[in-house]
Length: 431
Image (tube, rainbow, N blue to C red; front, side, top):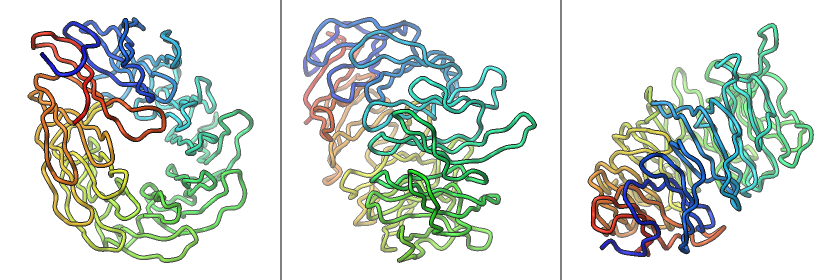
């Protein structure tokens, strides 16, 4: 019999997600009916039918129907509040990569094609359209959820386009304009939520970086003619990594937000930044047509440069920044990436193969992963020791379960099995 406590009996289940407080699992059956079941045990509740994917964004479970074969759009997006099992329709023709939830759990950002022109999108905040008929939108919440910062190109009736960056208070009220015209698409928000690094004077792939108070006011110029779509502020709230023009190519550079301590890390051939911690940055030298990358990693002191892999996809740094995890030979899908799972120790230069043909991987504490390979083996991997432990076999899907709100650890794992005796959804302790 599979290990753990069986929460739901039967076969053909797919675990979709777990609430961020760890109290409820969302799963679908073989006919795409969506259910919720308490992790403490109890009777499953039917939510709705015809579901392709369901994911929690804070207090809301986002339910998607009619996902296209490329995994880029959904015909319908519905939401279910955390204390409810009723699905409410929010938007149609939704851009899946746009969906964002605020860290305070209270707000949801979505972009959806307009009915009149699929080249334009309406932008939704908490179910209401805040910017109609836009292009090249990008929205991000401040960490405390107080603000939504958004860049967009908005054409007028004559076809003239205004490219701007605005700040929307999530509690309501008029937006504040940071850049009225000529804005680039990319921006970033400082960890304290007080400033926005944004681009203006965009000419082709280049733009000027300036730092703005999030409540409005004059920007402080930081870098001229930087790569307009490839910069980020580190979690230290001090350091920015960005691309700097070096003739016809870009080099990877670093500067402090006050304009000091500028230095170059990689002299040429960089096309994007894929991830960063407070002591290292992952950069791309190629981004292919499907979005996978050729990646490298270098420490912020300029040492430890290494090639990570091709056809790669970012899974992120461990919370302490000591390890980086990613797929290479990757295939991208809606809410999922699969491929060869790899990890590297930032303090060294060794790149380790965790496992080939991995369907899903998820960190469950600062130093460990859970992953499922295509043969149905569910395992854990310790980043510090490079040791794998098998949990179960013939597994079809899994999620690790949070120990509670605002808790980084996950001590339990839920998984579904169909082809063994006693099929169902099980909840078991992580090793």
